Length: 450
RNA sequence: GAGGCGUUGGUGUAGCGGUAACACUGGAGAAUGUGGAUCUCCCUUCGAGGGUUCAACUCCCUCACGCCUCCCCA
Image 1 (cartoon, chains in turn yellow, purple):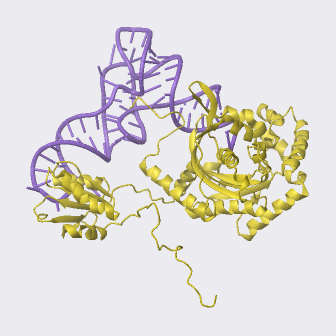
Image 2: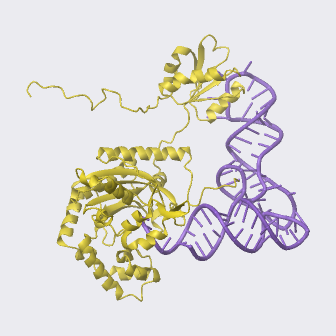
């Protein structure tokens, strides 16, 4: 047993899992781009005030779980616990509120929390997210939700349901909170200690209390949607209408609130429905909402905003649980072997054109018997062995052996790429720039009628 | 952050106050010199450190890590 362990709440993504994450990353960010949400990358740490300020009244609790960093004895910065505040900070810092609105971003980053770990709750975890600044229209809310719905469907997550609610704009929320404080104050002595505290801070979150008596009390509370303004209700109606138009199934959850004060109006969550996940309360795989007051809270102008964030680890786990197949193949498809124990450089030379052609090629560096090398190639998951240094492979020839079909063929060196290509796929080869003439770059044909 | 339960080779497990067992996996070698078969052997001192004891993996303490309930959940 190694003496060193990963820090508490953190873990390694071994190659297969990392490959799975990469798949999800590609799918997510490509979709984001299709929706017009380019990726933004912000630092892994921020001034802690960025998070405390955006957190609003719940800052004491948010601060408690913050993963703070001390550099050269100086505190003041924290590993980011979420993605929205840093993106808002970047939006302001770069004056993007002065550029054409709305401004849209996507992100995919590790996040950190100083909480005690539990299953699916690590101190370092990954989140993808979308942020949209400058659009107050309900269509932006709908787009964000539709994106998420489409993404989850795209990756194959079916055991999930969408819950939406509206908690009113900044003005309405003062009334909402006042009404709720008034209601819950009547039961002050019956609420358990934890929930009593919420009376002072974020009243809305009393709806999240687990204590049975608290839930009874909460059930009798005034409905949030009856307390918000007509404008709020109209906005929410537009959102739900839009969801219906798009054929997105949802349920309205009157008690759905979010943990953060900066949310306004629309809030939503995509919740896992598999019984395994619902035992200890809802586990959401993505959630978000509107945060019209956030940018101003952070010292900027009054800019509307709406966004979503999703837990990658939760999504990955849920997909596995559901039996969704993710291509996590990391093995070399081709293995280069040799019967000549001292031809290391020749093996490399043989591998190079195959690698350039796009095959995944690994080399057996050893002097072991061909027998052992073949066995090793199979154990490494290779589908094809390219063998040199044997009787048959003299005079510029090699053997290309299909390890699955257990058949082989002696090939000229010049034809080895073609022969290997008959058995294993070439992998897409990323480039710094797309090939010219690719679809989308072809100019419109001129039309004489124009 | 609170309470609880755990931590035995790569994985999953057994075990007991006297110096560790099983399955699979893995490594080396043998023999075939184009393969996952067979044979032999190997990889563990039981999370880390300390204590009690003639003697601890087995008892106690501390720490680390994991899981559960709670808190929290951006």
